[in-house]
Image 1: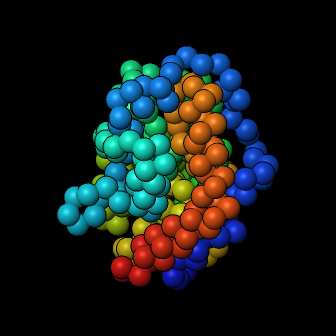
Image 2 (image 1 turned 90 degrees about the horizontal axis):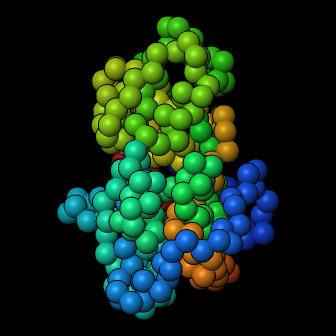
Length: 270
């Protein structure tokens, strides 16, 4: 495995009209007046897990930071309302949406069919893919799912997200260890509790830069495409407003500027 500074991943940034492997539903049916409620309350409730760099995590002072934290502040300003942070977790993300605990999840959310069945997704704003983040001391290659799915391999994932779903769907022989807290996975992996973690390549690169015991291939093999978007209630007007805002962010360069700022910073801190 080779550990090198993280690239900007600009080639992975989606254009507004880019085709995606599995487009989300059109969300034309309105089940909740989310946009009206936001303006009535005067607040935008943004859900974050605060455990997923570079999208949503906490800084040294405990404040939300990351790409999506930055975008959340911009969106609240766009809507002319106050921003309210709502804590969520990957296992409770869809239930929290169903129970009207938040207006929008901005925390590196991957588009999945089960989430799309509960709510609506914005147009994607970033694309990455599942890969292997390994313990450097393990002297073997995990460039394919077949290489990972062996009886003598232990894989660690966080509970309730797409990492666990991928492991359950594709690994029949490997031993799977599940941690409730995503941030604790990296410490456990470095300590030798597993051989590798299945996660998004963007996170794998950053965590490998942060911890000398962790490695990721360069370039990382992508086992499955992953598209990041914002999860909202089924409200076509709210989706249209967010999509239009994202299009302006992309056209103005603000989207790529924010990525430029957070991705290199994540590498340079270590």
